[in-house]
Length: 146
Image (cartoon, rainbow, N blue to C red; front, side):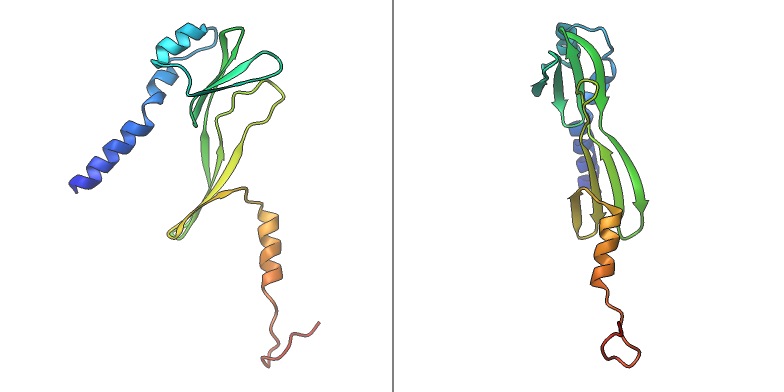
């Protein structure tokens, strides 16, 4: 019981560090104000041809800076598409702070008791694979009829 509680507290501490400070950010803040509010600079940055830059504080929190001023911020959003006792399918729109007209990253995760599989899940492709993998059997156990 104690180890489960300790694990939960450590997980909360590790994931919740950026969130309270990140919520205090708003458009119009200068780069210095953003860094001061977050208590640090970004973990990584990405520059774009239009002169703007994305500051990523972790994989789930970023801000878009233009002329050293915060113009937008983004967090990862997760939606559960399917949830069963055996598996669940979750869709994530990863935090993306690109200029208008650029597209962010999307990721699907299938969580099972055997592990988590990440990638892009195309339901039509999965259906086709299942159809190709399942072959009809003749009633007498012989070859299927065409």
